[in-house]
Image 1 (tube, each protein chain N blue to C red):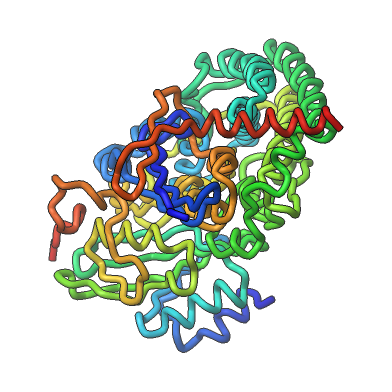
Image 2 (cartoon, each protein chain N blue to C red):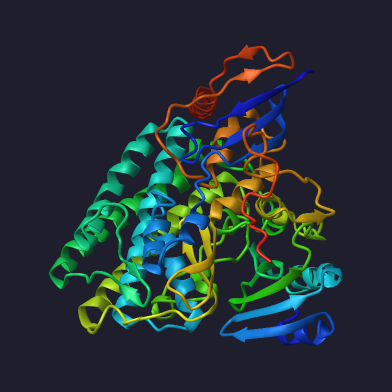
Length: 143
Length: 395
């Protein structure tokens, strides 16, 4: 099974802005390369998706996936940045990892991110709630 | 044959968190399941971002009443991860001791309820009887039976009184004996085996695909245990085994938890022995947390608790992500519940240990015309056990 040195060799074209800490790697991935990177982490390296964090920054909305490589206790965190804060869009990884379905639905609900290719595009927490307005619940659109 | 929907919840004694499961059944067989969450959403992440770091620890302790120390441990790990803050050795042993005691009481709680769901009320009463001394141990150590308030960035808030160690050891001896007895019952009792073997099987591939964690994954032959994968606090110095079983059924999930409880008493004993000799401070003076990102996790009784924080150098997190183990374990029902009889659905849903509470159960069956039809899943489950018991004794 591939290890972390292989990962950064194989994916050197796809990853940038690598931040290395003890047992943690944070790096930026372009949306078009996301499926390649995620497939390699999940299928080739045997990483497990812990969860993902969406954050509203001043200039963008970002999604940070957290992949745990349980054999070494290392985290690989691909970061996707979306400059269009009004209509953030990116590819869904649920077709590759079933375990990403809920968290992507939650990020859609909270931050209005449109995950292209997600099999079930509907809110997770307020699905049938008649009183909730259908708009991102957390995003403030600070720019 | 017509298919019916069986809604379970949103308020149900099986579930501590209010959640809604819709079982689609064809005759006696579950053919599909859908889940609806959000009934208990309290906005902890958002609230935490309005609080200081110390207040955040207090807040996350109240996310769950049962794993009330797993969230604070993961949270302080995340805060410490920003600057790679060191923790004093004595504090590391105290953290591990508290975390493992929590595992013992949580697994005993689940064991009791699992016994109740399949009509083994003796198991329920005994397991909860043996859980009580664990809560007393918490009271001796922290002054509280629940919500111990022990975790701080850089250490722990309270020291363990050396004079209390003999009494804590005595309680551990008692729990060890009783757990050995329960392990023997689980191994030898033909009714229990027949009732739980090959029920609600989660295959290894499904556990990997759904990113399952904790005993749910380890009962499906998946090696994932934060204590082994990324040993922090006292775990690098502690000797214990990771319990992994191959079949993925409810029986294996039960055995994993029973054996893990025995491992936990082993860990607690090692921590207490060390606390007799390891002296020194219990809290490093952390004055500020710099700008950056931190990621912390801990192996809660139900699996990996995950916290991520983003800081900007102020006294509060600008982003705090929390992911509890049930969040990834509950979607595995899609794989484990399909094709099983309705009578087994209750124990299968309970087998991942989604938190419990004592609220009144409420569910009803409706047919396609939405006409209500009352059916008691708990009774169904208990009747099946009774039937197996009669058949085995008749042989």
